[in-house]
Image 1 (spheres, one colour):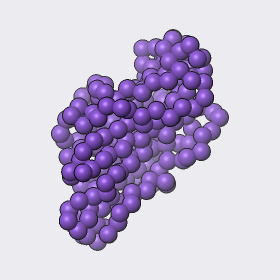
Image 2 (cartoon, one colour):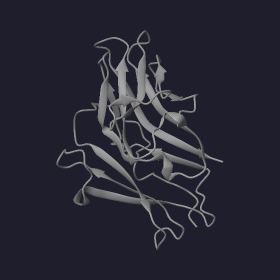
Image 3 (cartoon, rainbow, N blue to C red):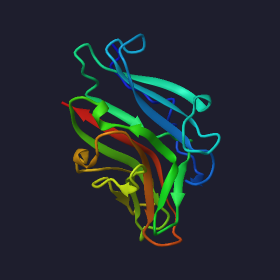
Image 4 (cartoon, rainbow, N blue to C red):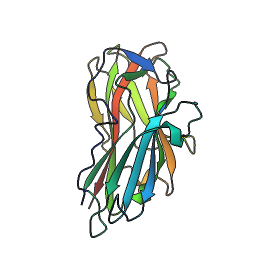
Length: 208
């Protein structure tokens, strides 16, 4: 029985000094689907596939898949007490200087379905944040790309010029609609023209 969920191959843990705007480069996509009982997961679970969106259509196709992982249920149908879902990462921070906000199309979890995780108790969103001006806030929100809206109670903010780890303090489980959604990230600068950035965003799921 698999008891640990490790996405080390999906997220680089070393921060690079350079940054990229979220609209540049190829998108890294993550897709979650139900895995039936079988050779990969004796008692069923979740199949996690990831790769680069080579044709830029925001759909992870078979020829674009680079990694496949499985989150397997235990013999009693339960899963790990804590599961961490890293957004796909390219080893750099993503930045914007827009006060209106930028929706990141690089860091995306496709087909996220909260009902795929039995006995869930709570959920949290975390990331490193950084601003280039201590008088200007850096603000992140999880963004429901399927319904084009902010996921309430997911706001992270900082005004530090060093990388600061931030995590939500409110359980936003009830803000997630049933059924699969594509989850992205919205980032805002507190002042138009001032650069802010984030790095290594993740969703942590807790079970009873």
